[in-house]
Image (cartoon, rainbow, N blue to C red; front, side, top):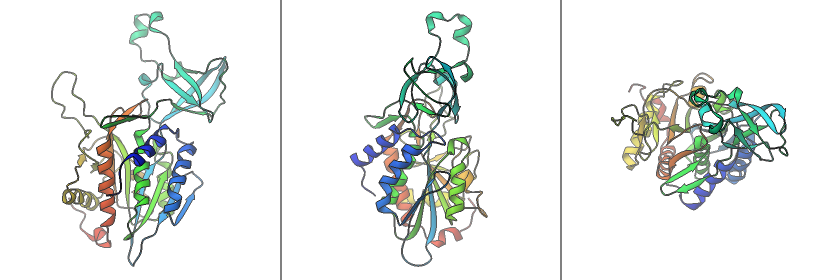
Length: 352
C-alpha cells in the first residue's frame, strides 16, 4: 500500500483546520492544488470551483475511472448586521441548532474570532431550559471591535488533534476523503485513467460532482466520503441493532442509501479485493444519508458508481472522531482496487 505515517497525518490536520464552507472552498482548494500538481497530467479549476485532475495510464483499453471527494463542509454565513459586533446568520448544510449555543467560530477570510451567543443558564426560566432554540434566535458575537460583512462564511473554530488511535476535528466529513484522494493521485496505477474530482457544494445538494462527471465522462466512479457512525450504546443499556457503521471496523462499502442503489458489480469487486488482501471492511447499512454518487450515477447516460466511506461519530457538529486505522485501510483498499480494474469489470452481470 502507499506509505502511511506522519506525512499523511500532517496533511489531514492541515485539511481539517482549513475552513471551506459550501460555496467558499478556496482554503481547501489551495491545499489540494499544492499537493497534487506535481503528480497530475492535467489539472484545472472549473467555473463552479471543482478541482479536476487527470493522471493518464499506459496501454490500450484503459478504463476511465472517476474518483470523487467533496471539499466543502457545513457552517454558516452572515445575513445581517445588528450592530455592536452582533450578526445574524444562516446555516449552510444540515446542522442541528442544539449543537450551536456557546460554540466558537471563525468568520470571514481574516478568521475573526466569534461566539454563537445564547442566554446563560442563570437567566433562564423553566421554559427556556426546555426549549429548542431556533437558528433565527441565535447571533454570532464578534465583540465591539469585530467586523464582518453580509455573505461572509463562518466555520467552527475547532482545532485538529490526535488522541491515541483516533483523530478529532471539525470537517472530518469530508477532509478524510480529500486526503485519501490526494494519496491515490500520488500513487496512481498505470492501468487506468484516474480522473480525480475534488468537488464543491456537496453539503447543499451534490452540485459540484454532477458538473465534474459531465466533464470527465467516466466509465465508472467511486465516491470517497465520511459516513456518520451510529455505534454508541443505547441509553437504556440494550444492544444497539440500529448501527449503520462502527468505528474500528474498516472502510464502509455502500449497497444503498437515500440517493443511490450502488452498482452490484462494483460492490462485489471492492469486497472481493478486501477479502483477498485481508483488509478489514464493513457494509454500510442501508438507510438515510447519501454521497456524491447520487449525482454522478444520474449524469450523462448513467454512470456505474459505488461509495466507500470512513466512519466517524458526531457528524456535522463542532467536532467529530475517526479511527486512524479505518482511514489507513480505506487508502489501502482503494489503492489495491484501482490497480486491478480492467474493462472486464463492467462486462460482468449486475445481479447481487
